[in-house]
Every structure is written in structure tokens, then in C-alpha cells.
Image (tube, rainbow, N blue to C red; front, side, top):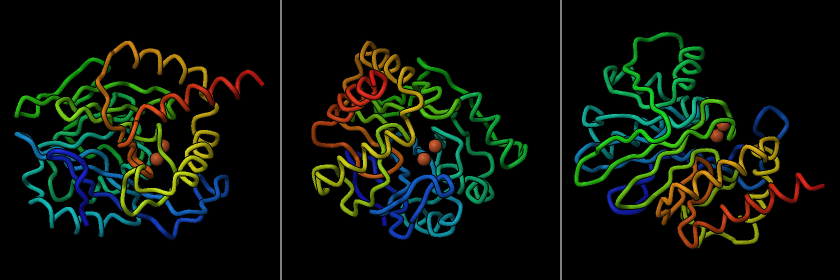
Length: 252
Ligand SMILES: [Fe+2]
Ligand SMILES: [Fe+2]
């Protein structure tokens, strides 16, 4: 079931109540998780990320209830790991010519995982933009090593949403989608656990990236990660927390 996010943006992901571990046995999941995918319907219809392979059929079935797949003008793939690209092969069988926007490294990793399928890749770098009509653009921000070499974030102008992919996420199932609807104590705990497990090894890179994003002066009003709750209320709180946690851990 799609859920409204903001403006013409809907969540079309998968809430995973049954997930118990992540990255093999490394990461225990105690409060569920989600793989967040987003559908933007402006002059162009854009799908941001997909969901993990085991849920591909349900994902595509639900997506079809929202939009005729042929009306999807392009896909943005912020990260190639299978929890976000896992439904791509099945989706591309239905709409094989659809442009896929991703980093050069993500293209290589996707082709490494699924083979060279002749998909219509458009590789992007920080500063590249894509006009999606109605006066809105997508602006791409490379997030190299946050947490993979291919990671990127995508900013939607007009609605001022940062689709941050794995950065700022949590393995935390929040049926009502937003941080202001979630149990705050659990949200904070899960965001910190996620930082410690996924981002902490790259804390010095993260600190430099936070400075870079700050200098870009993006008027961020919402941070929509690829796992867990969307930061709607005071979204910059998680950016401030990341800066603090990165400092604490590396000063030990
Ligand atoms: Fe990832
Ligand atoms: Fe992920």
C-alpha cells in the first residue's frame, strides 16, 4: 500500500516486520525494518530505489496499483546493494528501456550483480540535475563510502526532500512512516545502532560530506532514507546527531 509523503511523492516500499538480521549475522534486527522506495509524480514520473529481492513480486504488484509501469519515465538508483536494487531485474523485464540514473560505480556494481543486460543507464555526479517538470528538479549528490563506493543521495527541489538512501536510516519498522509518529526512544536507539553498524567505519568521510552538504545550502525540509522512519519533524536533528556521533567515536 502506497503512503503519501509530501506533495506528489508517495512511499511505495516494503515494511519488513519479519527481518531478524542484516549483513549476515552481524546486525540483529529487533524492531523490524523497511526498504523504502518512493514514487514522484510530476511532469515526469520517477521511481527512487526498489526493495529487497524476496519482496520483488509484492513490490511490483503494489506499484502497479499506483501507476501503469509504462508511465514510469525514469528510475533513480541511489545504491546498488540488493536491498535497494533487488527488484530491479524483475521491474526491468516489464519496462526494459526505462532510463536508470545512478553513479558510474553503481552501474558497474549492478552489472556485476545482474549481468550486462543492456539497460539504459545514465551515470551522474554531484552537481548533475534532472528536470522532472512542474518547475522541479532532482539534484544528485555522490555519497562515496557512505556507506558504499557507489552510494548517492538525491534532492528534490520544490518539496525540498533529500532521498538519502542508507545514510540517516534505521532498521526500524514504522507503519506510520514518519519520525513524529514513531516511538522516539526506540527511533533514537535504532538510528544510533544503525550509525554504529553501517556508517561508523566511515566517520571521517562522513564528517567531510556533512560539511560539503552544508555548503551546498540545500533547503532540506525532509530526509527520506531507504530504511526506517522519514525525518519529517526537525529533519536536521539526525544530521546533527551524525556529526556528534562521528566526533564521539573518533575521539575515543
Ligand atoms: Fe547499503
Ligand atoms: Fe540499505
